[in-house]
Length: 183
Image (cartoon, rainbow, N blue to C red; front, side, top):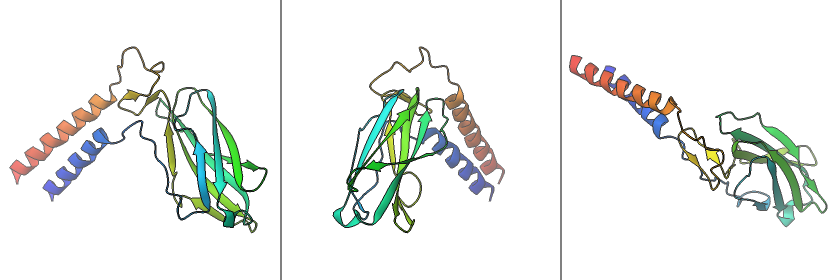
């Protein structure tokens, strides 16, 4: 039993060291939804507007009364602001548009889409979580700095957290080794 606990601790700590690969945008498959296409930039820029355009499939135009765009901005300090619901606008019920203001120091923008019909029934895309993540042109993922613009990077990276996690990982490996010798 001690061996299993030690291996679990090592695996959890090692995962924390290797988790999160910054700069890789994420998107959701739209094939089984009422959404035909989403048009948005593949990068966000700090302290500027981010615009999205959603085009509905023809058979969904009459069924949708409004669309909510739920956004969440995360910044380079590791903080994610609470999600914000933005009601999108349309002129023809086929193409819906909205804008969100991106904070200075933004790492990435998460979002999902809520399609609301005339009976106030909501269909979430995706069903759980955020389906999209768009990275900034200057970001920090908790371990590395990246993006096309390095103006947000510190002159000297003195963050001690990754070293602290590595120390914990090595300590867990050492404890696991001692536990296996005792049995």
